[in-house]
Image 1 (tube, one colour):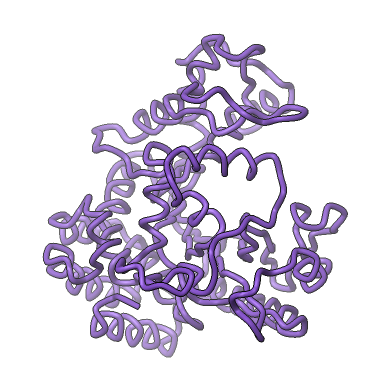
Image 2 (cartoon, rainbow, N blue to C red):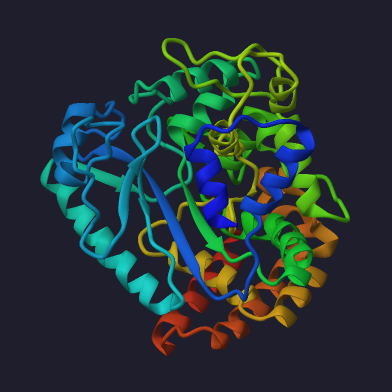
Length: 406
């Protein structure tokens, strides 16, 4: 089946109808099997050491990254992975990202990622640049430095909804955790649980109250910007008995962000992928076009063959290890998944309240301590060494004492 899907993409096969497209989405976005592997994507805003408010020069950043620079910044770069396999990519405002390979060892993944981060930090430090461990750029207004058709079109689309799209694109940074979909009968419970625990974890690890030198009054201004950038594209899903079918419908009913072509990538406002299949834009879309469209959906959890959890703020220093370990521990065993969902249920859906008030929201404050207690106990179901597990528990305890707001 995987080979057949790849052939369809490579051959430029056009999609016959909506039902065919929805069936394809369900297959490629929810690849079932025994869970056990995890991947990480870490983002940081980037700043000059001597003046964090000064815009980062793309040339200086490309020189600092050297052979690891992505081609979106240095077109002829070899894009060499970091020594332990992490790939360096950039977000539109120059946020630097490490994307790891997946691993069946959480301890090994954390060790490799930490080593790659030290390598990356050293390269940037040598050029007078530094990574900032917060979810929002606390020093400067958002400014796009990557000039690509995708990002230029994305900026114009988000501008229709207000100022938050540019802030989210160019001035925020997150911790993203990639988890297996699981066995067929567990897909729906795992999907619902990831969303149920989301508001509590957003609040517990909120770390983006300041933006461009101003206290926003929000615990997670990053999450506010993400949700407001384009509510249909970025918002959480509605409850549904069949999340696989619901995701496929959502993908087809989401307006096009762009259409890849020579020249402008602009798509007519409001035209959905289903409309494109129906003839709104000639010629009709291919499976490669559908794959690309799926990459332009940015909800709190994105189905990509695995579950990409996108709702966590970047953390200071090495504290990013804590939310990664918490999520992996909660989803290491199916009984823990179900227990976590039940504990978090009273605060499920409170995404805006989590972003606005953090742990000051009463419903979220009630469920978060027992949920994190469950996660800390479940660390014993991972392969983390005792010292690392204890460090995670210390971070969790500190976040609860501080109220989850920075």
